[in-house]
Amino acid sequence: MLELKNICVSFRSERQEKIFGTTRTQVLFDVCLSVPQGTCLGILGESGSGKSTLGKVICGLLKPDKGEVKMDGTSVYGSRAGRKNLQKRLSVVFQDYTTSANPRFRVKDLIGEGLAARERKNRERLDRQEETRKLLELVGLDESYASRFPHELSGGQLQRVCIARAVACQPEMILFDEAVSSLDAHTQVQVMDLLLDLKKKLGLTYIFITHDLTSVTYFCDDVMFLYRGRVTEHLPVSRIADTKDPYARRLLDSIIDFEEDDCHEAV
Image (cartoon, rainbow, N blue to C red; front, side, top):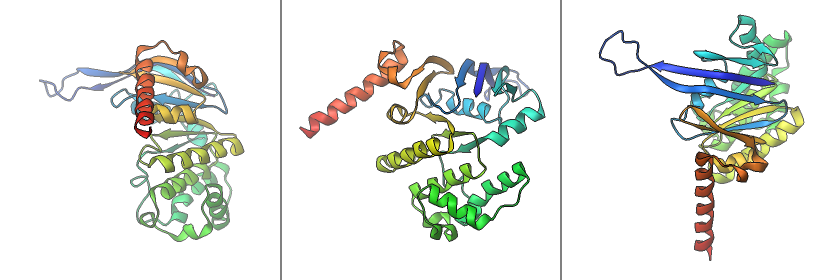
């Protein structure tokens, strides 16, 4: 469904002797990936690995210096039509649900942003109140939440609203950029269970950007390790224990050591 070939991205270096210096720092090096329809790909990397930059490339927000992004065979950056094709089919859920939700908007207005996108896409007029009720029910909230403001919701509830907004425009693919990392462990599991249920019900395809390997093993079908802008491993989550990549191995071992320490403390 989505394919990236040899993606390279660089940025102009901030510290340069000359005002109009041309020195650039490369962030992504020949990144390749593919996401089959109906699957969930986890993109895993530490801070500074380039995963958020890669997310911007996937979303159509950052044209790479080199390489190609295709959605079902159509080049995203090759034409305006390619961008529109991506915009119609992809939604994004961000890490910071507090800044991605206008504090002056009620929940019905936040979800209304996604419904407005669907109306433009399908050239139809929706019953906003009824559609909002259905979407809130879909993410485990009742219709009484429609009139609330973001500050009246818990973190988990507000992220559910952001998910409802992303689903409202009927995307085929959703990109989650650290979408559960700001939540406590219990709420993370609740939200991931919700997303797995939505994926099955709506036939969605997911890209899950994170630094948390535990979330990837719980949530994703495949995992791609990104280290200093390079793909070091790409394999099914079911075979993650077989990885020979040093970076992936180090992350796995750190989790195993952490779990063993927890067991010893419990004993």
